[in-house]
Image (cartoon, rainbow, N blue to C red; front, side):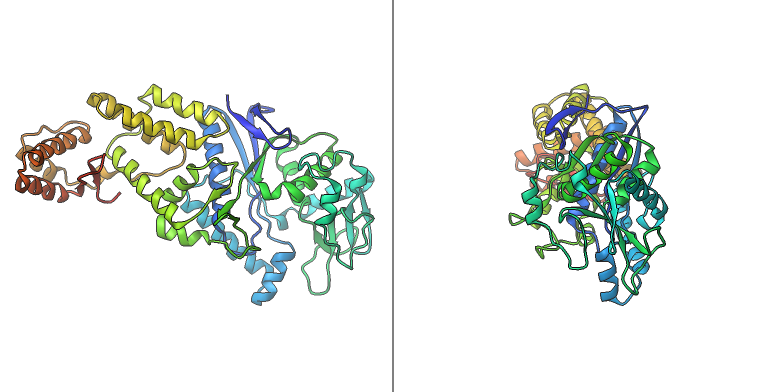
Length: 464
């Protein structure tokens, strides 16, 4: 059974769904500027999670929101002299293009804040009626003093909250830590009609309204970056449990941040790395593999050297499994995968034990090796990696001629034949018959197969 670390209880807990479907909500992007590497990590690690839960035989309902109106979006649109809608549409497309390039699953629901205003107004009205919300000239606020469980999720103290609170002069809140449910708009700002005056929603209320609108009750997993624990998820929990009179999330799951030279990557630090640049340079598979290498809950150090290392390793994996059909043929490898993923999605543990297993069995019989390769390919496809079928582009007749020339039979699994070819060539090299060995290497290159002397895998497809 899958165990996940629950941020609320500070412990590993077995995932148990409330119904036939596992209900998952991921806090998506605020579309003010282009996605960075940190956005990529959050999207990919929770894509691993969704895919693994489906692999485990469970049905999933997956929602991820888009915040397309807030103060930062308004400020950015004014800076660029465009409407907030134009900015939101452009950046939303950038995020979707990046998700597609990373081969992330499309959510079942992807609500936008601007399309959920009515649901937010209904929820705010309910909070006011229950005496959790109060109205001022500047908007509607949640009174945290009325909510006894405030800060239980983040584990912060009120002193910590007050030290980090910036009180704007126009705000007329009862308590500095109270947060906005609805903001009365200033002149020329985007606004919607409400019972309290024309304005726009506060940041936190949208997720509560969306979850209630989509799932109609408790969800199994609420996920996002650990920078959202406070204030966003703390405030979201406060308003949702107050409105609906019950805990609305079973498992709070958060991913760690990307670090650059030991510092958290963020716009405020001025060290954001735009995601599309690295997708263009390395491709979606390499970035997915980079994220796979680290425990999702811990900070992950980022550098181009680490990306290059990930690229080289992933290319070796592609070479190893090239030409085989993805299939679960190796029960030992399957067990390694399941045990690792059930342990709080421990992807680095899976990779480490997989490589140990490869080294241990690389000299096994050909059937065993082929089954191992097929299983590796299957498991990586489960994790969302996409492999090209190299067999479709090969010149079969030319390969047959090359193999027949060396008295090597054509096997159903092309890897078997090529491995025999490479072994025969290695014998020529050991005997210092380098002219024959070079000739054999050049012949294979004609069909797009590269022999790599000194590489453990021995050969790879050129287009991998």
